[in-house]
Amino acid sequence: MSLTLLPSTLGLLVQDSFAQLRMDRKQCCAKLLVQPSRGLVDEKFIVLVQKVPPGLQLTVHTLYKCEDGHNWEAFGHYTANATGTVNVAEDPSLGGTYSGVEQMGLLWSLGPVPGSKPGLRMRKMNVQTPMEVTISAYEGHQTEGFMDKVPLASVLVERWYMAPGVCRIPITEGGLTATLFLPPGPGPFPGVLDLWGGGGKLVEYRAALLASHGFASLALDYLTSKIMLETGKMVGNEYFETAYRVLQQHPQVLGSRIAMLGLSFGTSVTLKMAAYSQVIKLRCAVCISGSHVQPVDGSVAQVLSFFNENSDKTRFSEENEVIWRELLLPIPTDPTLKVDVGRLQCPLLLVVGEDDQNWPARESAVDIKEMMQQAGNSHLLTVLSYPNAGHLIEPPFVPHARASKFRTVTTGTSVMVMCLWGGETVAHSRAQEDAWKKILVFLRENLYGGGAASLSNL
Ligand SMILES: *[C@@H]1O[C@H](CO)[C@@H](O)[C@H](O)[C@H]1NC(C)=O
Image 1 (cartoon, protein in one colour):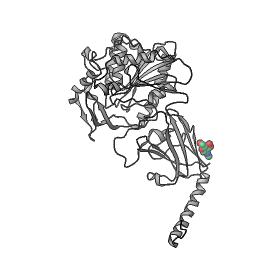
Image 2 (cartoon, protein in one colour; image 1 turned 30 degrees about the horizontal axis):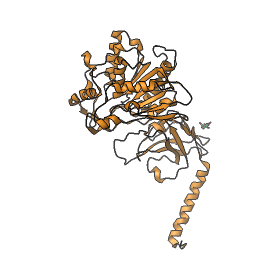
Image 3 (cartoon, protein in one colour; image 1 turned 180 degrees about the vertical axis):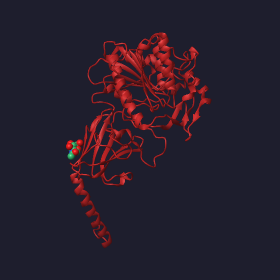
């Protein structure tokens, strides 16, 4: 290696190292503390910047590299107090991707870094690894170019869907495409059958998180299952009964204490099974962002083609995003076109985002309530309705996607569209936090409790 340096290069190097020295002085003093630095995704953390000059302007920044390679960031602008401290849980952000006192704004306001392709949605697909989020403090109120700046201090934080000791078991018996998550310990545990919506795929993260909270949870792929890919045929309703039996008969599951939880199209299945299945006996059901409107005698394929028949009611936003909420409107009066929720015998929790642009969740909840009042079982119903929340009501701190690219599964074909989900970021994030807490309480009361009929104290 040659050690000869041109004088001009040497000058630059010397300047550089002076700059580095100045930086090091600040770096040596600033301390960044995150507690816990390893936790569940729905756990709050405390972020403290300490030992900086009083009154210093700071930017606290999070960077998350998604499994698909996309970078997400969030940041808040702070001023250190008289003791040279910023406490994100107590001090207001004066600007950035969130403002005001927001303990978890550094996560829920994460967005794709500038220049990313449009329509991204953050979803953790491998739940056996944590989300690794880098939290950094930068001097000044910065808004861009974070990757080229030297932070005063950084901490790597792990956010897990699977708590230590949660067991992940792929399930193929009975032709299922599913994953069972068991909580730590010998059990037996009450069970939850967990269904996502019209995008298909085996999506595990919510079931993993439910297991972290004490429920044996089965994530089920019912639209793009292995059987469907092999035969080209959509699964029949017995597929859900098989899934229920697998859960029910597992030695570590309390067979008489099982719930179903569905989001979007998953609510269609949940309500149908809860009302009509001779096999599936539920302790309770949770339906997020969905509807009871569907041909009640129909299979999954028939329900999907019923939706498609109404596709002329599709609307588009100014940005040309697809709005599907009107496909099921007006709510039919024909009893063969909606699940007879008057038949339900178990507590039902409906979670509604009032700005849902994808499904008529609000109108459906109103109709469900009326039907149950008429049938005399409305004491089983709890509705959580959130103004300015959208369709994708996820576990807490998952960043809000108002619109994203979405591949629909329909019989035979699949189409990629830019889908408008709705919701306004702050309200939607609060809704996710509140709804998740209440969903856990509802499941705990009905699955662990003495069989209380409905949810009190919400
Ligand atoms: C600065 O903030 C820290 C952490 O919130 C607090 O303990 C300390 O008392 C504050 N100092 C002043 C002078 O307000």
